[in-house]
Length: 173
Image 1 (cartoon, rainbow, N blue to C red):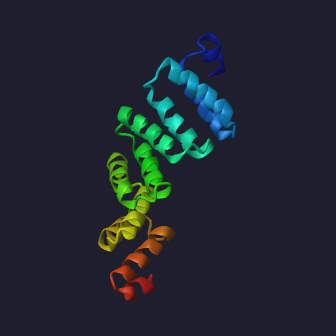
Image 2 (cartoon, rainbow, N blue to C red):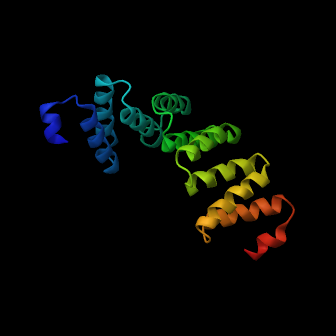
């Protein structure tokens, strides 16, 4: 990336790749400068928009509304991105304490990346919060069919079964 940036300092791809490396190294301020440069050059460049939202959310601690705007902007450009929908769902369920608002995001994430157990478990958690134990149980069963010893799936399944008034099968797990 450094060689590309020496020749083309505004190259959005190289700036984003280097920003990812800086982010992994814990250098959030350097990553921010690189993302800002990429966005000045290509305001709708999907990787830059995704990194901008992640930085605001995970590193810079922006207020939840600014983070939500950044995710929505990234999703407007990359509506098929499962990881972006997952992150936006997590923001809705976590920072906004909006389990109902997280459901569409998790559903879109699963549509884009079927079978992703972490997404399914976050969806099951939101469904349990909303009192839909049947739907949560179905998500847990899907996850357990793939990974029978998945701890979170087992725990959420137990919760769903108790919520449904059938603790005996849950106790066997």
